[in-house]
Length: 157
Image 1 (cartoon, rainbow, N blue to C red):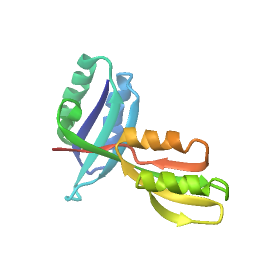
Image 2: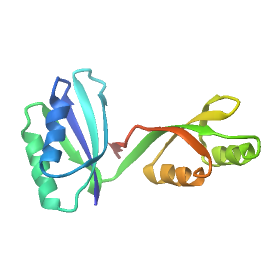
Image 3: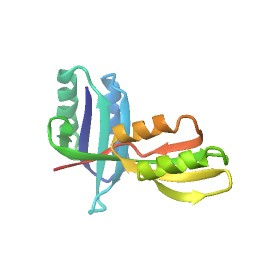
Image 4: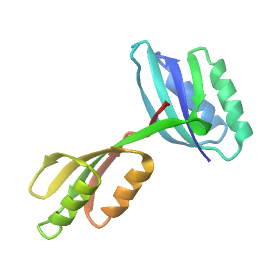
């Protein structure tokens, strides 16, 4: 089961390494990690997505996170109501034959075109992970030369 965990931490050197170390020490790969300052520059929010089959080990990780001196709060959104989003940038190659099809997909998915060149577009899509995956599946026949994703961020309702 995928868990989305939000951690407020003091914005200090080494905090990210200590937090990530707790997951890796228990054999969990972090699927997604987004970190940024909050409205207070001395506090950062980490949003971590981890696939955890054993709930007991994940509970142990959360307890250990709460014991770290730089951690302010730990919230597991998995069983709560929350809104999640992810940002993806794509550089999509096209030719005259498939440009119309690409334009239709962009309009359908409300994708923002950031730059248009003679043979490629750079686009931005902000949405939940499922809708991003759906869009990526729809454009699989196009040449994607670059794809950059932020990882999931979340906020409680």
